[in-house]
Image (cartoon, rainbow, N blue to C red):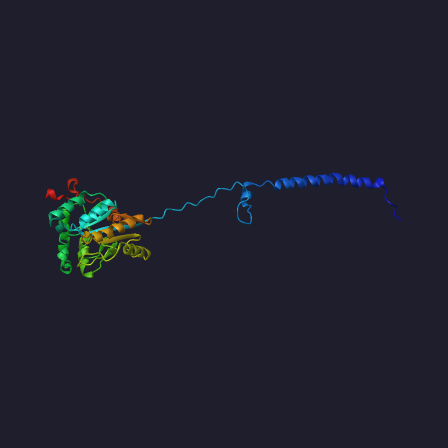
Length: 317
């Protein structure tokens, strides 16, 4: 038969639980206090259901630096000057303050007083460069002209000797052909020997990727400024150019003799300038030409004398 416990026998158990309970309570309070103090990293990770950081001090977001996208280059070139439209083109180019390249025909410089005046303006203008487009322009009899390669070379050399002693960049009249080191293209095979001869004579032959067409009877442009911009966008999108992301655009001075066509040219230039993905440049900065010059400079080709390197003014002839 069990003996009932007495009050004296129950006291030791009560004494044991008192300090134990106090210790547990202390540890619980300590744990709660610690859990309320979060590190900066932990606070940044605590978010509400809406996705916002609950702490008042939000960590600064580290923005990834985006590399500046390289602009696509456009080389605006004008052929066949100086002629009736050259003055308007030069005025627009200067007023809009853009670079442009004029491929001139030697005979045209001597054709009239007005063309002489335009020539003298060209050689003193800023932001432009002048390149060789032959002396006779083949008198527009291209098939016969290219049958004799030595005649083609002499025609180019005549303009260089008389007007552009330091210029080796040329454009073949009536032909879209290229000869810049390894960049080789001939549009009409019958003229291949003539193009090869120009390159052997030391000339850089530059063609074009896109042309601003005109009516050969009325000399009026066939495309508006907006249509040309669309064509340029398409050419870049489809990579229809000789050198990636570099487009050479051909236009003709005489087309911009009228005020309406001049307005289209000015509008075209202004819209190009407003685009942040395009950049206008001179043809001497064309990548293949720059590489060519690096190679020839390494070979140490003989440069023209300082007093003959500049284009020749007409009043000195």
